[in-house]
Length: 115
Length: 109
Image 1: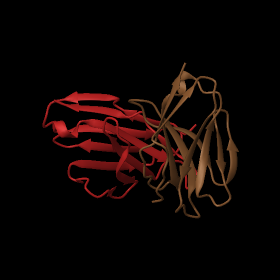
Image 2: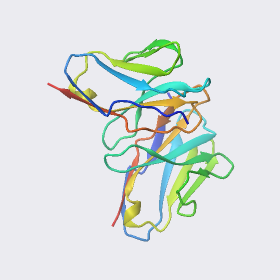
Image 3: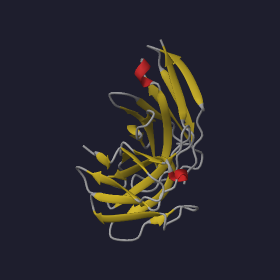
């Protein structure tokens, strides 16, 4: 149980393109999901908290107009990187928890490469 | 968010037991302690979670002293495939987590 699926696993696209990444909780409902970014040889950095039915909460320094988050249902959150540029190239990972006393489970990540 | 401190790296050999200690001096009453394993280009994988005393599952044990200001992840009889980065995190399950640098465990033949 407690599986989080992330799609796509890899994206390569040209500069200026907008890219959408999906995060789904397959066997549980999640009112809250989280989006992280990870650069090579570094740890995960929390970008934002995705809240079902309301606006996402962004961490300091993360541009909300650049990284659009939509949490339209209890099993799906999407992250859209708008007008992506090479510096947005990174590994993006989502996570979700079944509840307050349950651990977070992570997707397998999306490798985004902007040419 | 409770901050954690753990060793940057550890080396071991196949068949040995690996113990990674994490310090979390400002852990809150409602916080749980959770350990994750991450391989390159993959999302972190849940290993074990505990609140106090000892927790054991099929892959690891977690030891938590009474004051809860630290915890130790124990990996019995490691193999080459256990080479990974291990993260210790504290917090509530559905609340945001802050990842530290983690511990890179290298298992050698």
